[in-house]
Each structure stands twice: as C-alpha cells, then as structure tokens.
Length: 82
Image (cartoon, rainbow, N blue to C red; front, side, top):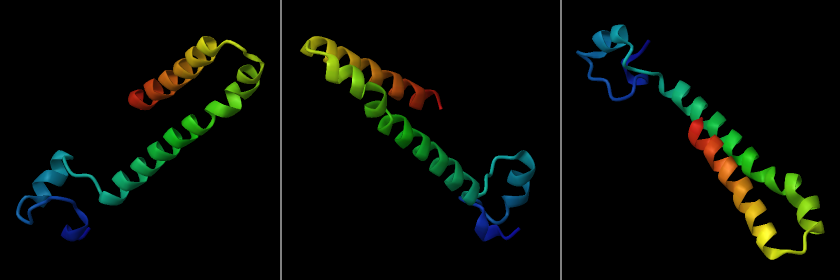
C-alpha cells in the first residue's frame, strides 16, 4: 500500500500507525460517509410519504405541527444514533 493513500500519516510513522490500526483508508471513510448521507436523505424524504394522508385529513393546525415535529425529531434522532 502506498503511503500517499493513507491520510495524515507521516512517512516514518505509517507502519507503526498501520499496526496500531489508527489509520483508515480514505476511500473507506468516503464510502461510509456516502452511505450515512444517503440514509439520512432517505429518512427525511420519506416523511411526506408517511404523513401526507394523515395531514390531509387533519384540520387542527396544532396536531399537524405536533405530527411534523414528532416525525422530524425521530428522523434526526435516528441520524444522530448512526
């Protein structure tokens, strides 16, 4: 593995860091970030699909507000737990 593929590694410390498992391939990190962002996007974009029927039938603005707040809070909580 080329030293240039390791992020923030000094050439003389690369081997020691690899053995200590303190370095991660940049491509692996980028892939994980992409997956998390996709999951986050999907969670938020699915809120209208879950609530549209309920909200269309609801006349009380406070209930609509509470439902939206609850769904967004749950989505954000799931994102922070990821």
